[in-house]
Image (cartoon, rainbow, N blue to C red; front, side, top):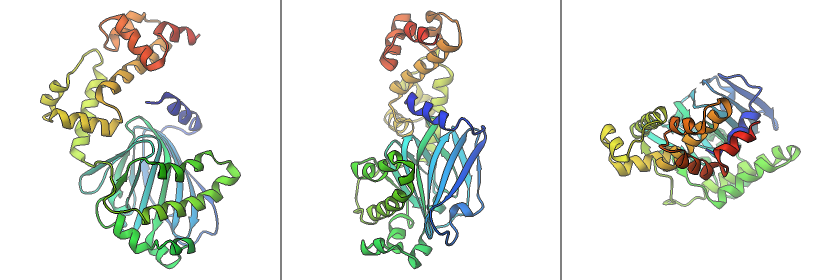
Length: 330
């Protein structure tokens, strides 16, 4: 987990209550037709989030999303004719899609699929937070009111439907092209941001419309596999005083070791050992801030046999020793 990203998002959402998903609408032009966020939908979470929604073109809506939650459950219409595009800027996002397929995105990754694929799904945040952009494209509306630049680029609604709405979801890994498209949206001055959004929406649709078949995509997994990995992660984090080997976990959960390692990294973005090292250190940081326990006691609580091993791991992650970190809190 990148602590600075988490802290920035927490500060951004500090005025939003837990259990609340705030949807803020901003008109960017004439509101023609209905789009996803003018339809009735439900969202439930124990965390919180903000969605800054913009009507960009007739039938095309964009949303800047900031979430601080373990997951958010969405219910909305199951429409095969609506193309949903999600770009993950920071954190991680996962879905169990229709048909038992699970997709997880890390920083810089993108997914494109029909609204029907996620009509009654839970958006999961394995690191507890996420920031990004979503586009909802009503392809039927696009077929009748298509921006001229898309027509000139040969991007038609039926082409987008065939590529992204007629089969499995697409999951595109981070690349310089996607970075070039989306990065300016997050660094642009406020007066420029919305006009730039209109350009970038067209750019991403042209990019997807001209994307070659056979392009490398992120691996998709079975939902049962990713749910099993979440159980394994829960066991590991609830019993920090214990050290479980890959082989022990493999036998306990009836999953082969290579699959366990591969799917864990796909869900949480890090190998098991690296993830748990960072998790133990972050728990120790909390104990150093909030308790007067000795360094040795804290080391034992988070699963280190000796204070020396704990101090080395702590410095590997934070670049300071536990004693120095505690002094910094006063």
